[in-house]
Image 1 (cartoon, helix red, strand yellow):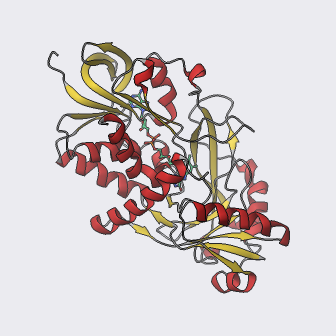
Image 2 (cartoon, rainbow, N blue to C red):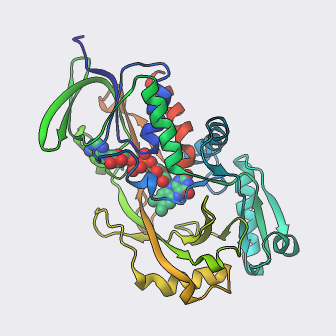
Image 3 (tube, helix red, strand yellow):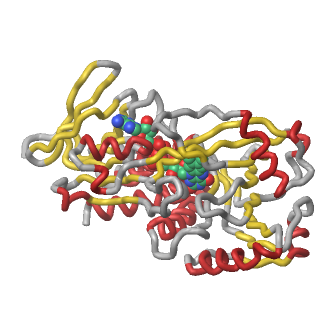
Length: 373
Ligand SMILES: Cc1cc2nc3c(=O)[nH]c(=O)nc-3n(C[C@H](O)[C@H](O)[C@H](O)COP(=O)(O)OP(=O)(O)OC[C@H]3O[C@@H](n4cnc5c(N)ncnc54)[C@H](O)[C@@H]3O)c2cc1C
């Protein structure tokens, strides 16, 4: 084999790409992360709820369930060890009506099968935790928390650099060709084109991961890898009403989402979201329309009846890279070594929506296992 520039290229410096770089650089000295933006973490990894999910809702046995539960524990350990801002704030899933109680029980059973520590609370016990909500009972999740996504990415980034990994910003992958012993990657750096050679590739390009798979020669429709962009917007609540909750409060979920829920961030700001809006084109449109105000207000008042129109304002949004079509069936993460498609040493990560932030350290371990099985 001729001399390669790097052993492993990771495409995308979001939280997953950085978690991978941090992990793989422990044992491998020749790693490059290729990122098209001017800094890491400028897309989905900085546009999310920053919740450390417990792993309650995912189908038992799925990658989402397994990697969320494992990743959550790894995150808490990392946070404590490296002072990454976080709080194990806990969460409740609240049934507002008697009619929602059977669904609550199903969620409880599902979460328990995933190995999540949960407790059923009656209305009185729930009210003792959250006096300002209207409730018929809830599930209490003690292991749910919140984290600074930037703090986590900063940690992964600096750890990877300290272990000799290279992170190249402003560096868009525009071509992938096989060569003897690996791959030639074509890069666009501020308008000028160059190539590097690598032995292995991990496609961790988030919203563009299907396009990277296509560039590598995979028919993404036949493979079921085409992504559908699904925006999630948030509205914030004015500080005067920001202290009405003590923890995260979720409604009983719908088929497509966890439902607009109450989030507290590390600065104790209260936000509600994200809603579910499939975009008609795969464009990065992060605007939050004030036209959603009345729908948001209805969801917010379902949880906190004393919040009024004048207390809320459009906030931020993020875009989910969904394999699930609008109204279609839920999908698991795709994390696949594409050897059978003739791409030895090429791992695709596609559809890494929630709980990708929580699962990031566990995804990194899983990918390492695929690359070096
Ligand atoms: C609204 C919303 C709320 C969420 N809430 C939570 C939550 O509370 N908890 C949780 O665990 N998860 C949550 N998630 C999911 C979580 O944010 C994602 O799973 C995670 O951030 C995915 O990280 P990533 O590194 O795969 O992708 P990204 O962060 O999208 O990173 C991919 C990177 O690849 C780069 N890239 C793309 N194409 C190229 C190219 N051709 N060349 C070079 N670089 C390229 C991009 O610029 C980008 O930086 C949420 C997601 C959304 C949208």
